Each structure stands twice: as structure tokens, then as C-alpha cells.
Length: 262
Image: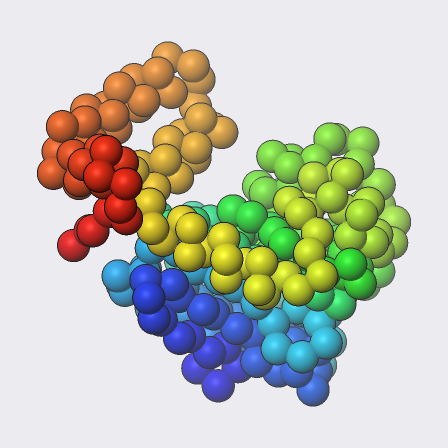
């Protein structure tokens, strides 16, 4: 994975887009590398992941040269094929949705340009921490296309319909403060990577099974009717209560110490 690096230590997976000379613009190789990085994290024992971009920007969007290389090919066959996500996504959608599909929390540390493909990748994270200089844009309309990397699965869960329409129709960048008010950004930090590391350490110290169950339950709550959510609550709780890991959490609380997990 030449365009994406993965480093896992202390139960934290650090995934970095690594084309700083191109502001981490996404070419076809990076799409493949992002999917491979997601699979590597999924197969690891990481309890939380941090997604970041090397250099001045998180990701300035699609590499236009890469987009141009698709001209003359059978575009419909390429993008309509359901090749990933158990037959639900194409390659480009999977590069963003693989992060939402992970059973562990994903924190995106953002700076500089977070445009188009870059924004959709960031939206796949559970939490987005942005530097004050961050600019965010649903950039696809600039090129006469629509958000097509899972953005229309992710955006409606974060922002109001009128905000989403304005972002998409205009392709205009918004700053971090506006992004936070609208729901694109979770919080603003002078050093988003340091803030992401601190949060990741906190999450990594929590019960891994409870964290995974919580992410699963949140996903169910976002897409299922109330009856299904209530049933999932009970089922997931029954898998945790009284089990060794949960009892270790309780013992650690009473013992005023950090819990120890396998």
C-alpha cells in the first residue's frame, strides 16, 4: 500500500493517506489501498482507528488525472458492479464505507482541504476532529457529477436536508466552524492529530466488547424501526452483562485501577 500507511500499536490503528505532494488526492491506486487498509485494520486486534492525511491537507478530493483515465471505458459497467461490502458497494463507495463498517470506532483527524472524495472518506469515520484551517466541500458538482462514494448514505445522518442540498448544489467550501455548526465536524482542535490520539487512548481503555456492541447498536438505531432497536438493545446487553470482561470493568471501578483486557 504505497499511498496509504497503516501502523498498529497499543491497540490503536493509525491509517494515513500518504500522497502529500498531491494533497492526498485520491487516484485509483489509493482507492485500492484504502480498501486494503480497512481490511488490515478489521483483521487486527485494534480497538480504535485514527484516519489522517500526511502534509498540509487531509485529502483534496479525486485526482483529476485518475478521473480522466476512465474516459473511453465502460463507465456504467465499472460503477454499477457490486464488488465489495458483501455485494452492496463498488470500489469507490467501499473506500469510504469500509470505515463505517469496521466494528471499532474510527476517528478522522482533519486539516487543510477536505474536498469531494476526501470529505466522503472522512464521513465514514465515527468522529471528525478538525484543525481551525480546515475547509470542507462536497465538491462533485464542480465537475458535473454527484456524490458517489457513499456520501448519500452518510450525509443525511449528519446534517439537515437544506444544509445537505446547499453543500451539494453549490460545491462551495465551508470552514471548520461552519462545519461544526452544521454537523460535518465533531469538534475543532489546534492539533487534531494530538486530540485524536488522546481520544483514541481513552476509547482503547474501555471494554472492547462493549465498544463494539455499542457501534453495532448505533448502526441498528440509525436504520431500523424502534421495535428492532429495542430488541437489539436487549440482545447485545445480554451478551455483555455478567460476562468476564464486564465483571473486570466492575472490579476495576471498585479497585480504582485500569481494567485489564485480553
